[in-house]
Image (cartoon, rainbow, N blue to C red; front, side, top):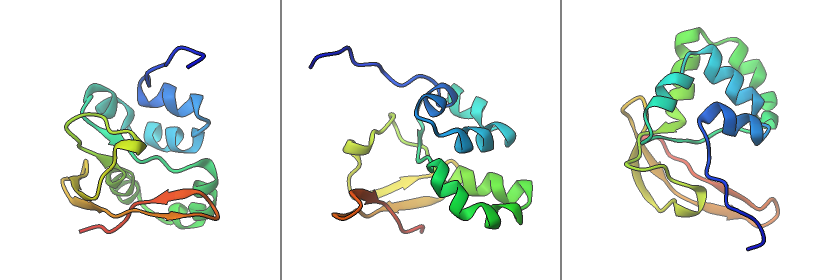
Length: 119
């Protein structure tokens, strides 16, 4: 190791540092930053700016309530913050109180890890 490890800050500072500005903007607009920041036992599955651009047309047609529900689905109420290398197959609960089943497959071409299957 040739540098100090920096622990993640709150969701907005971490999102901005990682250039996830579309997600931070959406969470801010929907007043979800404070509940996430106050509850340390949450893990956020944040979309990249590029992903937001791909689905932007669909988001424009959603009401605030629908968008809040969609964003809340990407926030896991985990017992401790979970980092991407710690995910295991199984079921976790989202901020909405719904179950989310984590199933991974790796795309060797894109080097992307996918999780899916809402229950």
